[in-house]
Image (tube, rainbow, N blue to C red):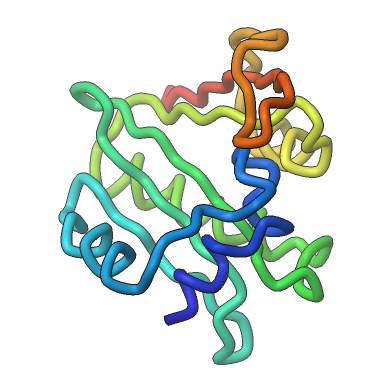
Length: 150
């Protein structure tokens, strides 16, 4: 299962705080996917009929969604595909799902992601300096973003 491979790959998961990967098995991934519904989805991204990454959203409060994205195939990074996928997701969440606000956070070291989020109109809300530790105990900082429908 492709998600299991990505989620267990420390290189893919390092910005999420898991430089050793998640260490999960296929049945655990299957259980995660069973939670998919209109308000909580994990989506596999494809480019030229090939899986290249994943994107997710979940409702965190009334009319507010939290989102995330990973382009897991490194050969497909820096091609604008993440931006394109996020644009489609944002349009769906605002226009079809009627959310009023979308929030996300980014590891402060992930400058490429920050550039994309800001290009799409996300506004930095706060920087959380040394606010959490990754799975090997290294202090990490993150940036919280929001995008309002208006």
